Image (cartoon, rainbow, N blue to C red; front, side, top):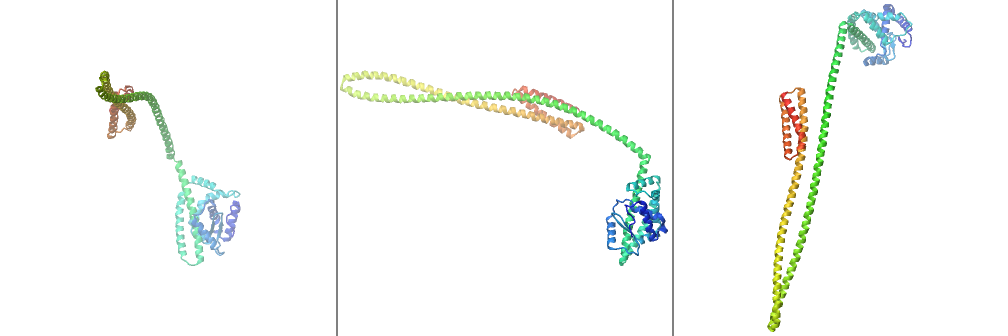
Length: 487
């Protein structure tokens, strides 16, 4: 048997081939044109549709493993993506159930008559068929109700046939098993096809009726108007937010400029402080040089005293030698009076010289004592000067550290105050009340107290120029606190 359908052949040629096949099977007389034209259209409809995997598997296995005998006189329909077998048993079942025949005939009557008017036209495509179905559904809105009623009969017939096929499955005969498989595959494909077409027609008719209704049009217009109003409100709110953000940005830029100016002034003050430190370091270096000079003078004085001590020792030695000589002279005087007289004269002279030497020695001792006193005084003065210099250095370092710490504290407190002010503004915007607001205000008060204490310390250290700016910040902060209290 040749194929029923070939997509390359024209519509009229296919129709003639179908009629030839029907005459051979001797069924054309019972059913006429309606059933087989509807069946052909039913099969050709949606050529791009892919069969379910189970149906394709069952059809392919039956077509390959179970060749169809000539006695059954099956219709073999070969398309590009599917192999479908319509057996004589299927046709007999359709003959017994007139409801199925009526369903397919009624469903395809209008579309078949339109296409039979011009048999020279080619087979319609999938989009053309869908447009034709949509036009038919819009003309007759009650058609889907009849389809649903007839679908109930069709489902009942399918259930009966499935039960009958299940009973036949129990038969162990191979021939009957093959027939049952063919029937099941054919009915499964036909049921899926009819179900999809019915669902599509129902969806198209229902959606078009809803869109044509006045209620749908009214709601659509109202929705569009509401959407336009909502978009306008959103634009207004967005513009207001943008203006507020621009104002905040300008305020922040002004604050940044003020902060930059403050930083420049602080840098200048730091430069002055560094210059003062350098001058103090230079003065300390000069003091150290003077101390080194005084130390050298002390060393020279010590050396001179050592030389004087050596001279005194030499004089004492000379005195001792002179005494020895006097003894020797006394011995010699006993020998000669002249020598004694001369010796007496010499002794008298020597006694005078000795008295002079003794006087000189006493004066030198007094001078040495005075020098020792002066040295002790200078040592004490040097130690006191060293202590004073050390204390001055410590005080300078402590003052510098206190100054730096106070500046750091003031900077930290200003940053903290700005952050707390931002938090208070956020709380005012959010309209938060209660414990959170009180906690933030307490923290602000503590920060302002710390700022005042630091400014008071700076006043005690006579740094009034730097505290003026911080006093202005305090006044702003107090105003801000009063405003928050009033709120």
